[in-house]
Image (tube, rainbow, N blue to C red; front, top):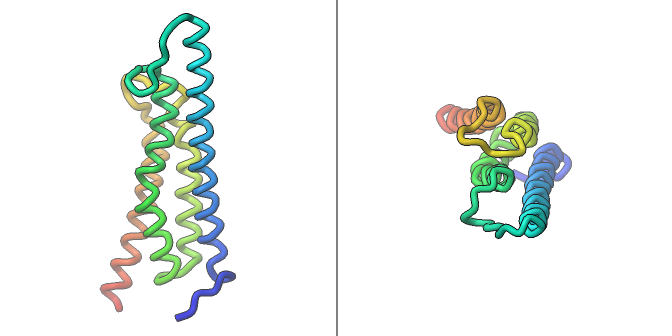
Length: 145
């Protein structure tokens, strides 16, 4: 079996979009941190990046870390599907996953409250549905094969 870059264009684009979004979330996290440090300093308060409970910093951290937590399963399952099941389904599922992940910070809000907003479940649920689809397709292929 030979892999062709043209056959795998969709999964490659999805992977690059996912990584671009990941680094975009990291830039957002850094921008929030720098701005909050400045605001706390102007108020004469100490900004504690790791043990503080600033809700805006917590939301930026949660967005980036949640994406990082899900990166290995997504990329492994995406590429196993692309290679062994087919690039079309991997591309569609991966695009849905990236779109859901892009919605995550919008659904979460800019400030993490005492409880997670119910809208977050939409983005998270879509992501889990894609991962289940990828796993199911692989299991089905193993059993059929």
